Amino acid sequence: MTVTPRGEAGARAVTISDVAALAGVSPGTASKALNGRGRLRPETRERVLDAARKLDFRPNAMAQSLLSGRSFTVGLITTDSVGRFSLPVLLGAEDALGAGRMSVFLCDTRGDRIREQHYVRTLLERRIDGLIVTGRRTDPRPPLLLPSPVPVVYALGPSTDPADVSLVPDDAGGARLVVDHLLATGRRRVAHLTGPAHHAAAAVRAEHTRRALREAGAELSGGRVYFGEWSEAWGRQAALVALRADPEVDALFCGNDQVARGAADALREAGRRVPAEVAIAGYDNWEVMAEASRPPLTTVDMNLTELGRTAALRLMDAIDGRPASGLEELPCRLVVRESTGAPTSDGRPR
Image 1 (cartoon, helix red, strand yellow):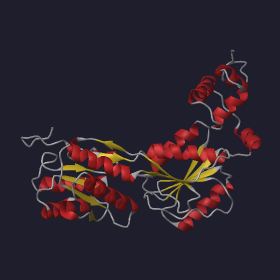
Image 2 (image 1 turned 135 degrees about the vertical axis):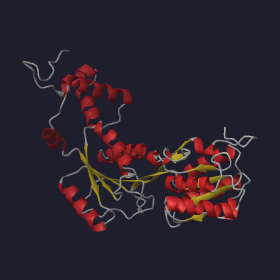
Image 3 (image 1 turned 60 degrees about the vertical axis):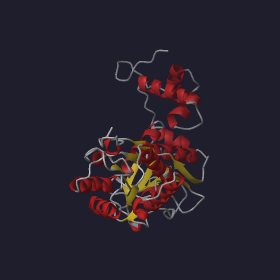
Image 4 (image 1 turned 45 degrees about the horizontal axis):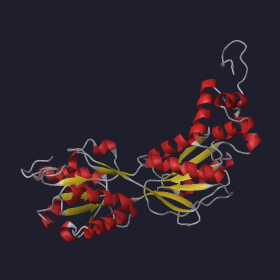
């Protein structure tokens, strides 16, 4: 089939039938692929999208909306004004929603519930098809108060309502990744420096650090978790406290990368070599922080982009009448850098 591309003399508007013919599928299948609907095989969906790109197919948004009763827009509400956690979630959501030609409205509530309700009303007035709610912490949060019902998915910070669908990083698994890695490099005296004890992320990571060490026949260096703040200043202070409590400490597992970077500075100033004498691991894989540390930090990546992508897919399922419920934990991954090099017999890192 030959379709004259847009912009050429005598060009006609490319239709969904043209896209379907080039992709070798029915118009109905092409429509589902372009709108992100239906359970299609990934290769079929990609073939349709590729055909649409080749033909420069641009569906009429108003016509689509009238025919489907949908606006093809989604709201993303965040409490993370800095964007450290919400932007990766947004990028992942856009990757998934873009395949269905859906747009995302980003609203920052700055942690203000009144502002949050204002944005909810504003988005609903725009006839959005659904909402993704995210933030900067993994602490459970109350569900949104919705004046009219739309599908909602919670990403990073779960809803307290078990009937809602919530996606969170597997912090327990992330902590175990670090402990297993440190033990595999020969470390046995592991201290844990982290943020406030009342934060879910700090509490979960600390509990599973204890468990993983105990299951391996080891205990926390210093006999306790060093709870404090999510800051470099606390990392410097806590590292010195950990050294005084156990001068033989050979690893510091820190609850985030800021704490880890501060700890690395304190060890360097104290004359302790990293990683030859003391290994350091962080959490979050905040690349500008982890890679700028000296040495660069081994850390846990919470895969927030994948979290956002999965949240968008769950939302699209709900929009299509297939809602889910409950808490879903997504795996984290360990990013190994120079700060945890294994010690050798001569005291130098491998």
